[in-house]
Image 1 (cartoon, helix red, strand yellow):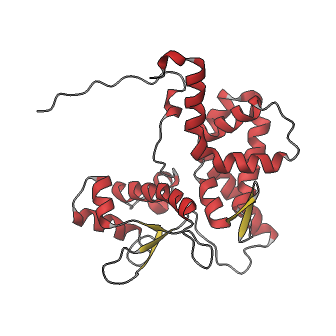
Image 2 (image 1 turned 60 degrees about the vertical axis):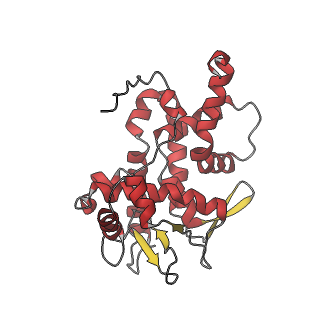
Image 3 (image 1 turned 90 degrees about the vertical axis):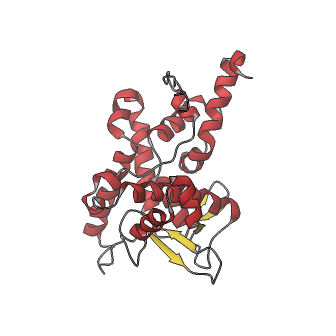
Length: 257
């Protein structure tokens, strides 16, 4: 039997130095997803993580919808499971055979399917969707979701003096998610709105804390705070770990190997 490893504790903010897969809380707290298996929920998180490659490789269709490639073999390897369980987990998420969180497009014999990963917030089809009353309801629903995802209550405790900024960030996230434009300007680049919305809905407590930290450490005058925050929030998942690692390297150079 292989010798059991001994693992150490997390100290301070060390947890922020590592990369994690993110699974939306809604998959566990919303009754709509209660029958979705744990494997399927984990797979959805893995697919959301794979979406970062869509940005890097510009995998967008003619409607600016981001897509990924995710084979059954990929699932088997990442979930450490057999083919049957991998197929079952995929079918649970599929729009034809399951709950509808992904949509597959076949490319031909022997080729990996194109997969569209859909947002876990359902799209309303009512004709009055954009009436003021309905829009108010949508805003409240998204605001509640965002606050839950970023652990707003914990931020109230740990960042009590920054809550005005936190509220501004929450409002900006909700405003962005509800944007009806096809593309959204981030810094100097235009991105598909669907991609920006997915990234914003995946922001967590650590990302918000990171953005607050960046704002407090910024010594240059910010001419357009909204533009600054949009860029900071959009880039937080990909820059946070490197930023904190650089901080540790600077403050504790003896730990750098």
